[in-house]
Amino acid sequence: MRYISPQAEVASSAYIGANVRIYGPTTIGEHCVVEDFVIIGKPDMYALAELRNSGRHVRLKDYDAACRRNTIIGPGCVLGTGTHIFSGTTLGTGVEAEDYTRIGWDARIGANTRIMYRAQVYVGVQIGASCRIAGYIADYTVIEDRVAFFGNAIHDYPHRTSTYEYRPSPHICADSIVAFGAQIIGGVRIGEGAYVGANSIVTCDVPDHTVVVNVNQHFPKEQWLGKLGKFDA
Image (tube, rainbow, N blue to C red; front, top):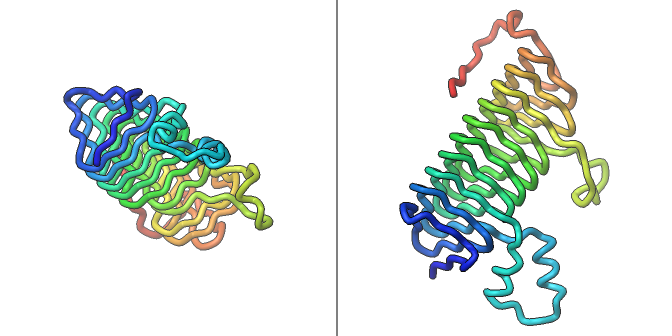
């Protein structure tokens, strides 16, 4: 069953697939493609806690009313099957979210960025334009323009309750590449044009135009003898 909130505005040229749920004050731009089983405008955990603690039987209209943040899906976006987008998120023009991706509340995704299959983007993440994003992106991570990111951007967890307290988030600068399986841990800065090798572990800042391999091993690009991939936006 398809559900489109009475608060939502869906462009007449947008394609909306089967069993799609669009909640709250959501805007779907011109020529968007929303494939089957997509959910847009899901309420955040605070709104859900409010519903859970209300003591009343929750109906669809209550759930819909809990989605108070404006969710914006820009023109020409493609949302693959099973994608979940939480309330308050903005997708720029031409963003593609491949099948079964998750984008948390209050995220900002720049124009022509592709969020790849089953990627997880969490709360308040900012991603620039013309990026390619896979893997796991922790809360409030910043990824600038033209980044290829295929690893995990995660917080440090000094004790088991850290999930519910603020921890510094990674910052990935423009034109950098983070290869498959790399772990970027804590509030580190990956410099402009840097290259983080596959399966590397990074726990300290990386200067601009630097290659990182293994555990925090840094090499200026001009001194690196290995072969580097290329990313053209």
